[in-house]
Image (cartoon, rainbow, N blue to C red; front, side, top):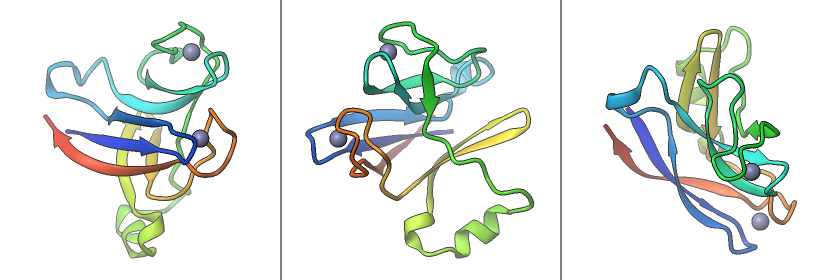
Length: 124
Ligand SMILES: [Zn+2]
Ligand SMILES: [Zn+2]
């Protein structure tokens, strides 16, 4: 159901993170990487919580690194976009699909666009 991804940045950030849900708790929990403004770090948040909160400091000042699917776009279409846009993980909320792509993201620790994710393994 979910995917464990490796988050790596040139500043030394190196974390394994869950994207999506695991079978036992899929109705209540869906994990997604986020920036925490208070920790200035990459944290995992439960995007099904309202509001999502940082698991480290409890702050709600978290921004999931989500790219909503463009209106009208289908998964097949995103599959046709070159490899840098290919998605690693996806979390679907009521009206929104959060997608994590294989591309550079702004790192919350060093503020450089050197943060990348790669798929490690699928999880149940
Ligand atoms: Zn925090
Ligand atoms: Zn960094």
